[in-house]
Length: 182
Length: 114
Ligand SMILES: [Zn+2]
Image (tube, rainbow over all chains, first blue to last red; front, side, top):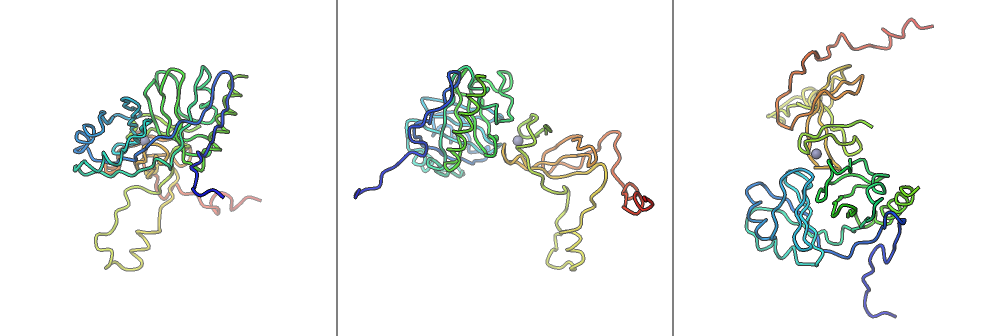
């Protein structure tokens, strides 16, 4: 009998997709759901070391840390290095609300020339370069679930979904990747 | 697919990201503990259900999360315009608000059908 609980990532070592679009679970990361008014943005930006974006559908990224605009006073922070985002937020006295959602979300990366088409198979966002350039981010839907989408590169996207929906999102993206190659 | 302009995201997004929120500009009585049951019923439950122009609340729930208001035609589903919550009810050029006369009843339209 095991004498300690093992942390098992929800998607394990799954891999999917097609030759044109690889679908892979993203590495574990720390995440913050951040809400704050305009007067706290400057202080929070200083504390987190990146400029919290204030325009719709934009993001800011510095050294593996991303801040995604979700709404006029709402951001999703993702740190791929596993930094203690809650600890940083705790040191900011300006009025804000920060909730650790590191384990609520699962990240899935979609990469390759067909990556956009794979996502568009189930997502109504306009993913053309003009409407959704590299660095663009938005909360939207993928099939029957809500996701947050971040374009990390010309052919690279990060899909964030809630943990229990991750097999659904992974399967749908893999199907979309195969269809995109037809 | 119906596209709805979100005044906070400042662009048109798919209807799949939105949720309807009922009539807009319904003022909550400031003396709600004192009003009669009939007045409360009027405020809380009774809506006009007009045929034509209507002002409604919508929420970009799978987007920026914000409530906003929309002027929409209940027959054609056309969105005339959307505006931020808290802004006054706009005038839609060339479109007059629906009146009671525009309401068609079963008796009026189908009553003589054989
Ligand atoms: Zn919006």
